[in-house]
Image 1 (cartoon, helix red, strand yellow):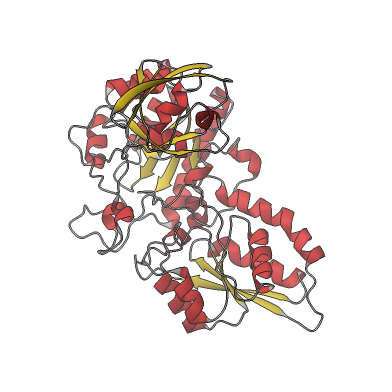
Image 2 (tube, one colour):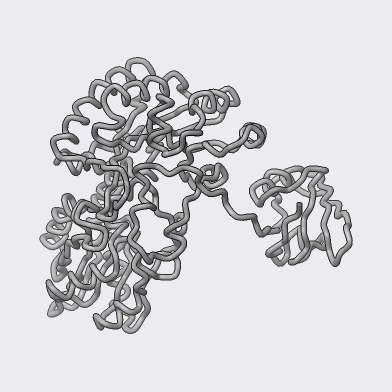
Length: 462
């Protein structure tokens, strides 16, 4: 087994010792290199003996370097491991027909969990990989648990051969691997006594299980031949929040922290205030939508005075921005926009709340809005501003919406700049104002956080 060198950085140690693009790395210090992640682990030594293949010949490159010198060598990796489950709630199975291939890919790879915070079930992780995780200190990991009762978990995963998750997590805990757990909650399926058992079982692994996040099941209108599941309701969300207060009292007394968190969607669905920053205790699961709205609100409070102070258009000019959002984030975003419009003279941000016709009205988050739905809403309600501001999570790296509409097409048809926002409303407005000062510029994009990735259970509410 060998991996091809994709790129060697100019001026790097790798270039200095003669490594080249196209070389194939076989071993480092007599250890086989199975993927780029293992390469990063192995080259952390100060003295390296690298076996490479070049032109049909095998040669050895000796390297003496500083401990933190990664050589500047980037390898092409093998494909990521795919999921062997058929979860009854999987969002990938609820995509409409005809979506592009990346949106059909189900990843289940501990390397992605370590590198990017992807959730994994560990149902296809052999013992040798568990040993590698412990040996190479691949921590933290993010585990999709859903239920600890073995038969129920197999039912949820659609996998009768799924192993019991607790022995796996115990082994990782004994190896001092930090884990964060996720429960996709389905009314009448894994709630009630099953949820209580899951929380108790995971708490027994504290502190190596550092937190548990509960997220609502997401249901599209494309569930033909899939198990019947119920959506969460405002009443159910309020009941869950009441349950959580008792859970928090228990764990704050026992652990000194809350341990269990609900995703922001439950608070918005219940019509309850988002907790203060101190509630989230370091935001251990913010990437799963736990506390992201709080960060968004706090960034707004910090940035609004800056916008009020520095916004200075011509006294005879009123600037308008048409802002796109989805039905769930509209619950808190409309109040914020009203405050912007009241406090910033000569600026008006006009909200357009897009109902998700493509996936179904039950999908209320912005990350699943499609280009056609956005454009149709803007045309129906009328675009009155000089630019359109999009949510930060509606485009992939190539500028495509989920329905393969390119943002440049929308920009051309609307005849005005289309700007991709960030997870900071004030900074997004400022970026839009910058775009207006540069006529004819392309749609503004920020680097993606994790690339194109559709969580199978929930999407960020912003």
